[in-house]
Length: 336
Image 1 (cartoon, rainbow, N blue to C red):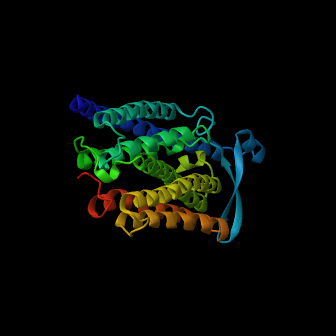
Image 2: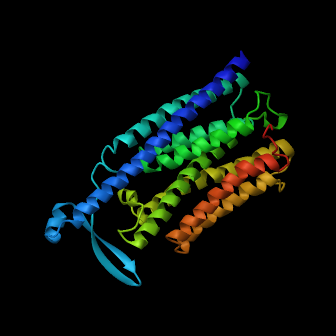
Image 3: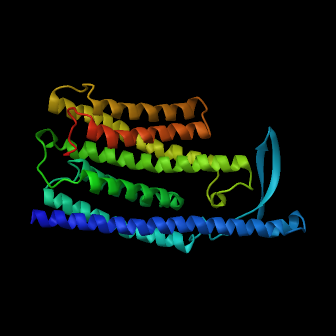
């Protein structure tokens, strides 16, 4: 029975990956359609020679760009309302529907793996990857209730496909009992909160990338490439969103660090031992603490804050993909 459930979990995982690919393609086509609509709107604005009144009638807006220390005011045709506003394009709607379907299959695979193992399904690298990617996608969908971030769909689904692909090819192991040190209720609390924090860090990384691209585009002026970015929030708004999302992730990671220390004292009789995993968890906390501090008190804005946010996520990925697999220590629970 256990073997059958584990097999069903694998089948559902591959099915979810296939649907994620469809979602990724849909979100990519949505970006292409947005770009085409903005280009068409810009061309229509260029043909308008009746002056600013006629431009306003077409929905043009005036934007300020800085060129060589001089502020230049230019009129740019606004994208059609079917872009990022309202219901979005049909490709965006298909992408969201496929993401929800993929998540249903994904969660089912996690549940089957947990039932097969008769425990929470994050006792090794494969299970951690399986559950973690599901939670990243779930956070992406739930955040839509707060803010329309569907433009991150191509980033989130792409990241999920890559992580799931690596997990199924390199990390898969059969269902085995937990190691003695992991047989604790802290496994449920500590690791789940760490996964949730990682989900918000992933979302923040996507927003940071969007902010960097938007900053570059706005610096080059309306005639620059990547026209679909005109349908996204401006760089300042993206920076605020990045900060808010990463702040939630930082709070969760702080709890992860504290819970890990308490669990270490219960398991090994000390709160801190400079184990490789402990050190990298603390490094991640320091990087994001530096990001929050620099932005709040040192006035870091624009590209600098975005790069610091991406350095933090790079540290998270290094901790996940390298430290867990190649570094030996008390936290060597990859199962590989």
